[in-house]
Image 1 (cartoon, helix red, strand yellow):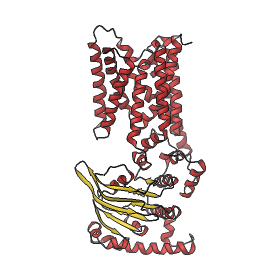
Image 2 (cartoon, chains in turn blue, brown):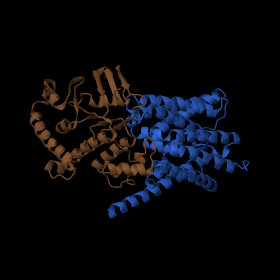
Image 3 (cartoon, chains in turn purple, orange):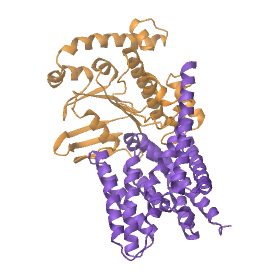
Image 4 (cartoon, chains in turn blue, cyan):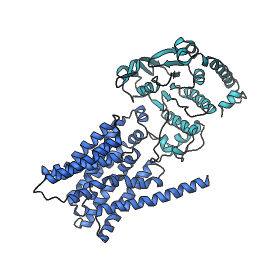
Amino acid sequence: MLDDFMVRAALAGLGVALAAAPLGSFVVWRRMAYFGDATAHAAILGVAMALAFSMSVFVGALAMSLIMATTVSTLSGRGFAMDTMLGVLAHSALAFGLVAVSFLSGVRIDLMAYLFGDILAVSRGDLLVIWGGAALVLSLLAWRWQALLTATLSPDLAWSAGIDPRREQLVLTLALAVVVAVAIKVVGVLLIAAMLIVPAAAARPLAATPERMAAIATLIAGGSALGGLRLSFQFDTPTGPTIVCVAALIFATTALIGSGLRHRGAASD
Amino acid sequence: MRLIETKGLTVQFGRSTVLSNVSLALDRGEIVTIVGPNGSGKSTLLRTLIGAQKPARGEIIRRPGLRLGYVPQKLHIDPTLPLTVTRFLSLPRHHPAEATRAALEQAGLPDLRNRQMTDLSGGQFQRVLLARALLEKPDLLILDEATQGLDQPGSAAFYRRIEEVRRELNCGVLMVSHELHVVMSASDRVICLNGHICCEGHPEVVAQAEEYRAIFGTGTQGALALYRHEHNHAHDHDHDHGHAHDHPHSHEAAE
């Protein structure tokens, strides 16, 4: 079964969806969208280094994502103007990464594969990495769920319950770096943040609790991955961007449904 | 052993000293109120006690196994975070449905369990915050201007609820308040803070203290005496006839 590249692609997409959607819910709740971007963009620098030193691309991307995520996470506690800081870091990481890749003479790299993903070229080994990473992220989130949610709601409430919000922030930082590293192959560094945020945002109008929002986001992300894969096969479009397009259309639909629900709610009050 | 005790607590933000040499202690069954002008370090003191702020010097001694209940000044819930009242009450620990229902009932709230936190009125929201803290059966309840944004009957009712809670749980209560007249009548002890502890003691003693008057002026004195009179009145009624009283003040408070 795994011999079929379409089956491997579908499994890869589902693996990323499974990890990215619940984590993405936290990214949305904590207003860390730019944080996801900065971490993802730093990964291209990691890819360049991995190729230069003939390391595994996954390891290189993971290392750079971790460094970027930790840097941002540390700076965020120190009163910097975060949107500016993240804008600077995200785009300069991307620029340095692209320049670094251009230095790699003799190595033929398809840069597009790292920027937009290459889900149809997923190997059995890639699948193992993706599902291993997804399992790691999901178990981290499940283990810390209550504490993460409390710290997200209010750091002071967390402190008073004996939870260190900085530790919970670190858990999210780690999870984010892992998701970025495993998602490069599927959607590419430019669109990883979309896989985190769009399904979660699309789930918001349909959910009454955080758990339901994460679950619905996972369904939407999985559906987008499979739908995008199919559509890209049918219309011969790039797969990563097609997956994100499907997710965005679902977002538009639920946003409409949501405003309809609110309207009805207001009328019946 | 005291519930919580601080010795020579000094807190600094960068180079500015917000609190210097604060020593205080709290026992079970005691209601202690911290008063002080804006920027006097009241909230910082509470945040230091819950562990959110590290002191530069001094120590905090908690009774081992102390359970803290904390009611923040305000709680912003991001609109992207769906949160029903039930779900909120089960943070950070899950409680059985029966317990959360009872908690709302005791807080004097209708069955709001499936309502979104963001849809509650100001008064309901504060009561839910308190109910959540109480579900943990705290030994020490810490409230940071918990009646902010409530009207007078609302905040009077809120303070009566605090007194009930103190009786039910026999917990210590430490709160910050701006509403001097209410505070004075509801507290066993008042700590007047202005970067350091200016004065401390029984409400009447503190109200007479020079340091207190220097900060709050003598103007509040009249209102204070008047209010305390009313409060004693209502209090006696409570003891003699339960809740069936018709005193105008109590009537308001029962709202």
